[in-house]
Image (cartoon, rainbow, N blue to C red; front, side):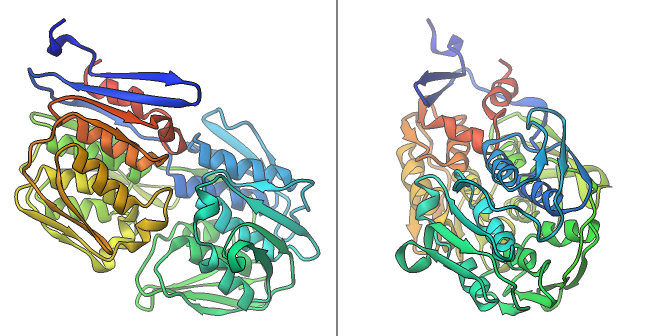
Length: 452
C-alpha cells in the first residue's frame, strides 16, 4: 500500500498503555477544521473546590471531564461534598460551607494532579480538629510540596510528610490558622491559591505577594462566590479577608488555552493550514502563548471576543505562517509555563534561533519537561539544546519519523503529536494514554483536523 494512503493517525492499546502512530503522507498534509477544546483545567479544579465549600448549589457548565478534575471531585466527595457524575455538560455540586469539610475515612488520592494536592492542602489545613492524609501517583509523590507547606506552617498549620515534610504522602491536622502576608519566591498560581484558600477560614487579612503576576482564576472566582478579595496589580499581590462564607454559583468554564495551544502551533507550522478554535479563555494572565506566537510572526487572530462568567473568551483563528526565532523569558514565562513544550515544537519550524529562559519550574512537572522535550524532539531530528532553566532551538532542521515517548506527561505526548505532523515518515509515541489527563478528545480531534 502506498505510504500516502496509509492512515495518518491511529492508536494501538496494550493493557493500560497506548501507542499513537502518525504517518505523514509524502503527498503532503494540510489542516482545516473548526475545533472546540475541553474546559479550562485550572478553572475546573477551582469550580469544584469552591462549590464544595460554598453554601447551597453550584452548577458548573463545560467542566473538563479529564482525569485531573476527577481526582479533585473524588477527594471532595470523600469529605462530604455532593458532586454529580463527571460525565455531563453540567455538573452539580452541593457544598458543605467554609470550614465544614468532614474527616474522610480513607487516604485522599490526588492522582497525577499537582493542582488538586496543593490547593487541597490550603483547605485541609484550616479544617480545625480534622486529620487528613493526601497522596498521589508515583509522579506526584516526587513533586515538591515545600512551596505550599512552608507558608501554611507559617500560618500555624501542622503538616508532616516524606523527605523532611516536602513530599507526599502528607498528613495534615487541621488548625485555627493565623493570617499571613507571604512573599512568595516564585510566581505560582498554585502557591497563591493554596494560601488564599487557607485564608477563607482565618480571622483577618491573608496576602500573597509574587515576584511576577501569575494566573488569577482563584481571585476572580472567589470574588464571584462572595469572598472579599483585593488585588494590587502593581504589587503583584492578592488579599482575602476571612472568615467568610461562600455562596453557590453558576460557573461557565471556557475552553482551555493550554489545550488550544497545540492547534495554534499546528495551524501555524503545517503548510496550507487554517484552524479555528472556538470558545477559548483568553484571561490576560494566561495569554503568554499568544504573545509568544506573535513574537514569532504567527498569523493568529482573536474573533468574537466576549466575557463569560467573569472570564474573557474568544474564538481563535490561526493560519500557516513563516515563523522566526525569538527570545522568551522573564515575566512572560509564568503566563505560558505549560505551553513551553509546544512552543519548542513551533521553534523547530522557525527560521533562526529560539531561546527559552527562566523556566526551571518545568523540571518539577509531570516529567522534567525541559529534559524530556529536548531528548524527544532531538530523536525527531530537531537541533535542540537543554539549558539549566530552558531550551535553545535552532530552527529549520527537517524532522523525521522516529520512536518517541511521553514519559507519562500529557503535554509532552500532545506536543510530540504535533511535531510528528512535520516529520517525514512514521512517528510512534509511547505513553499516549497520558493525554486523557487534560484532553481526552485530543486524538479524535487530531484525526478530524487531518481529514480522517
